[in-house]
Length: 525
Image (tube, rainbow, N blue to C red; front, top):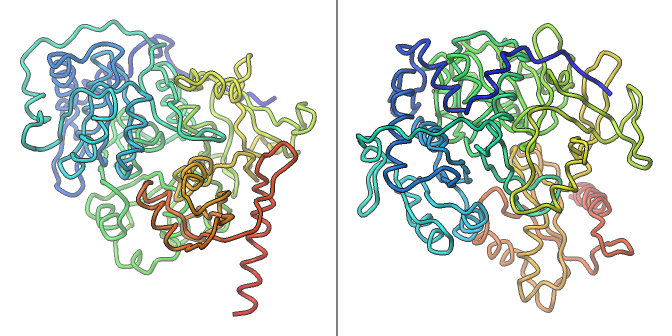
């Protein structure tokens, strides 16, 4: 068992709500710029942020939003995303961010499972939200911008009612992101105000980053890395956040150069881009001081390439949505190439033998288990999945294989869980398999992750066809039903899907066969 140093924070801080904590911090430097919208240059000071969170809470309450209600955000990153999320929490509600590339069916599923009452979106995505809302419990739509027949965000903020008085309940649910966990289809991850604030303090204490940085906020805010690691920890430290709707190479680099970004958190595919793309040399990135990477394991050589090219510090962290965001973090005075750093303050770690369930000594590989104040409360409406992930005494089984060396550095070496990590986003094989098995030309199917230099992994389907079979047609059929990051990179016809005697898919067998197949194709080319 490994325990890092204590979390240094006033205990009363963890008894607050997330918006109260952010607003109290904002009042200390109200004239400083809090957020800038990268594409437009629109900016908000910390004083603006404090005021608008209150106006959003009042506007939502006037529209019938009540404590315990769920507000869903279906929009790219923007300062308004942050204001809406914190405003809903200030009104006593919970916030569920959804991937803005979702199809109607995917969005309707999340809306229904989260019991969504209100949804925020942007005009180009309004039709998708309307169709999804008609299939769920969602009653009220609000748009960032203007659209006929829909309440505009500016109108909501113009509400002159008194801000609702909602007592702080640190153990109530504040965030409801959706994660596939260690296996299966997406599930609502119940994160309390206390867990979020604990992780915010842990990240800032462990990273050692100074106050008042300029941080690039381009990782999607519907994801824990984008909202907690970048946004909330940045606001807690008085940083200037430059929001970017999505990763696009030219605008990404241009925004760093224009706003003199000093720090950013990225995922491995972006590291690959920074290490190798010639466009990087055409922009002045000399302002960068530190780049942190998470979302998937990354080798030491890539760290070193980016650090040398950008002439800045590069380090890795590790976490998952079920622990709010982060479990391990590197810092300047304690780094080791290829490691995700040390365990967070006030967090315990175990390395457990897969066969016996016993703790393993330093240096031995096993499944990583953690326990700490940042852990989730469980999966919404899914006690079976919760019990499979959380032990009765509060340990989370990560599904990741790793080791802890003699100096306490954590290394991630493999993955038990079956999730595919495409550019840092989760793709659940079970979800794609369910769709494939509904196709009349598919008798059986299994989805695996294939290593990919740019994406990390791409989803590939092995299919037992029923009659005449067209692989490209099947790829197109599935693409119409899922978000872009879930689309199949390849479909391979086979005679049988390997399974164990109990019927469980043997994905590792398929992955070995897939690698052998690719090697044979390359040799014969």
